[in-house]
Length: 451
Image 1: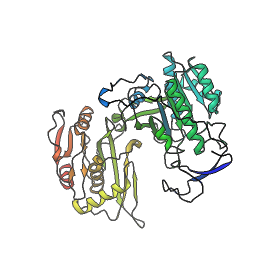
Image 2 (image 1 turned 180 degrees about the horizontal axis):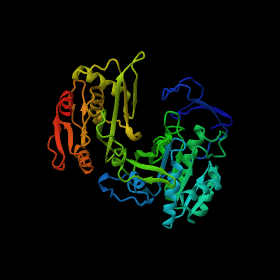
Image 3 (image 1 turned 60 degrees about the vertical axis):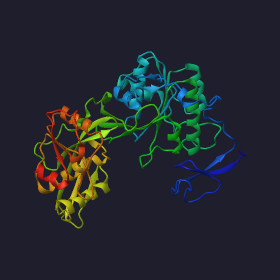
Image 4 (image 1 turned 90 degrees about the vertical axis):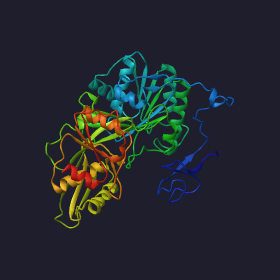
C-alpha cells in the first residue's frame, strides 16, 4: 500500500473504498464511512497455518479440545465446558453491566488453581483494578496486571510471563503503532484483534476480549470482529436491576443461544442456580394479567412471568407499551384477540412486560401473551400453579412448539400442576404425572378453559 493513501472504511461492515459516499455499498448503512490515512502496509496479524494435504473426512479422528475451567459454573456452561486452549472469546455489553467484574472473578479463580493469568487493563490504572479486586476479594499472586495500550508491548510482555490465559480490557483501547489512526477506529480494532488472535492461537492460550457496544447494542467496530473470534458473548440486563444475563450468540466449541443468569451483589457477580424460581418469586396471588410461560434459552428451560395491563384510554389515541417481547408480535396478538376471541381492545391502553428484564423472542410465548392480555381485560385471574405455552396463528389456532417435554419437566419441578399446551403435541411420556395437561386447539378454547 502506498504511503499517505486515504481510504474510507465502513464502521459497520469494514468495507473499504477510495471515495466517500453517504451510504455504504456493501451493508447499505447510512453515514458509516470514515476516513483513514494509512502510511504503509501493516504487518499481517491473521494466523498463517502450515501447508498440508487434503484429507478425506472419513479419516479425520475427532479429539476433545482441552479446556480451562473458570470455576464459575454458569460461565463454563455457556462456553461449552470451559475456555478452549487457543480460542478467542469476545464479550460485549453496556458500560457498567459487569464485563470486567466477571472476567476479574474468573481470572482470580483460574489463578487460584495455579495457572498464570495476565489481565491487561487498557482503560483503568493498576491501582483502580487493584481496588476493585480487593472489593471482590479475588487477589492472588498468579493474577498479573498490566496497564498498557500498545499491542506490541502487550505481546512482548506475554512472551516474557508466558500466561495460560490472557484478558484484554478492552479491544477498542489498544492500538498498533504502525497505523496512524486513533485507537477505536475501524482499522485499529480490526488489525489489533487480528494480531492478538494470531498470537493466542500460536501460543495456545485462551484469550478474552472485552468489547464496547453501540447505541443499537451491537459490539462497536467492524462486524468482521465477530467473525474473527471463536465465541461471542453478550451481557444483557439493566444496570439499575440486580440480574444479568450472559448470552452466547456464537460458539465454535459449544452450544449457541445458551444463557447464564447472574446477580450483582456487593461482592461481585453471583451465580443464580435456579433462575426460574428467582423470576417467579414475587408473583401476586390472584392478580389478573399474569401468566407463566416456559421458554427455551439454549438447552435450558426457563420459566418467566408475562404481565399485561389493559385500561380504557382517557386521552387521545390508546398507548401501546411492550417490554421483553416483540412489539409487532404483540400487536398481531391483539388483532387475533379481537377477531378470533371477540375482545374489543380498540380503546384500550395496552402494557405488556416480562418480569425480571428477560427478553422472550420465541413464538412459544404467543399464547401466554394473549392470555395475559385477555386476563387483564376481562379481569379474571389465572391460577398460580398454571403455565401456558403455544404459538398462536392468525386464524386463532394454537400451534405446536419444540422441546415441550423439557419445558413441562421444569414446570413440574417448580410445583406447577396445570399446563395448557397445543392439542397436536402428541405423546409426552417423560412428563411427570402430577402435571395435568390441558390440550387446546384454539385461543378461544384456551380462554374458555382458563376462566
